[in-house]
Image 1: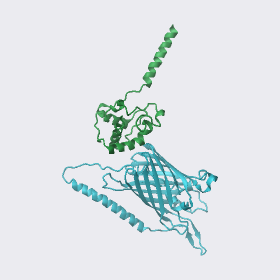
Image 2 (image 1 turned 180 degrees about the vertical axis):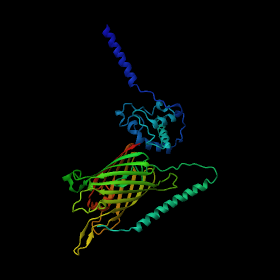
Image 3 (image 1 turned 45 degrees about the vertical axis):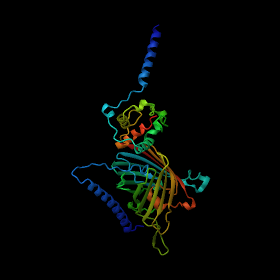
Image 4 (image 1 turned 60 degrees about the vertical axis):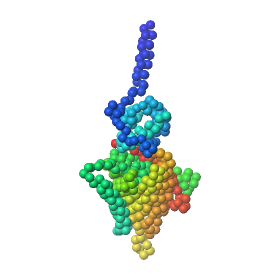
Length: 132
Length: 309
């Protein structure tokens, strides 16, 4: 009986721990950053510039169309989310800008590689165009 | 064989070209000032054209591109042997190859410094690249102009077959004015006159016992290059280099090269087919004897890895 209780306790602990450890941590941009207005009005030119940046810097993980199926995606510890879904698209432009700029974990920050803020907004405008 | 050379015509031409371009830029700045001649200070950000080329190199030439401040770059350049031996050396893949390992850094905006070493003649190089002018989106400045220069030291041990007596005999120099325009999102073109100078060159005694240099110390060339974007990540690239200086003998041959450029976030990779078998610009410009009319082509590649600090 004692053994069974101990075993149950271990199983419960491992299960709980695994959920705690491996569940994706929520990633929220600071409120002021999330509220930041998009400085570049979305246009065909802006989306085209964003697409060029996407192909160079993002597509290898996030996939060409944002499905999270890039060639490197399988090697990542965090599965890239599907950018076409409303769960992603419901975020504010400011939030997408902040996350692209700062990065977290597997996702590198791009504020040094894409130093021009106008370019980061172009990238946000391209991400919006992935919505289905 | 040391020679004092003068090249006023080239310098004059380049000066006039630069003055013309600077004048053009100056006039557009003045117009801009006229339009804002009130007391209100209007701060308008100058927007430069981006990605005229995908990296520092286009096959055997530098491009106008200087990466952003804080970029550290590691370059690997490799040139296989020519195809002419066919299967004997698997089209040059098993032949002697020339390689260069180089590092560069951008400490300030528009200025890049670098070092490198190649197995060819055990040469080491120091490079300097500076963007003089950058093409703007509003076309006030229609061209990008970059100056590139290097100093190279031949570090081979002295022997009687080499033209090395003093330390200064080991040095050669290369300078190039690179002028480019991004025509549209797909097409970019570049022209780049260059000047190579060897402190010492090989010579021989004539029957009259006079010293006859095989080549001049100085050499002029002009390079034409272009990029056509096939996709956002891949471009077709081409390069043609025409020697201008006529030497007493051993005149170098032009270079025709065509290849592919593939760019990712941290890498730029180029693979191409061309005539130039060396990896330093002055060596290629002065000593290339691969002849495209005899199908003396070889495979080469450039790999650049970039980090941002």
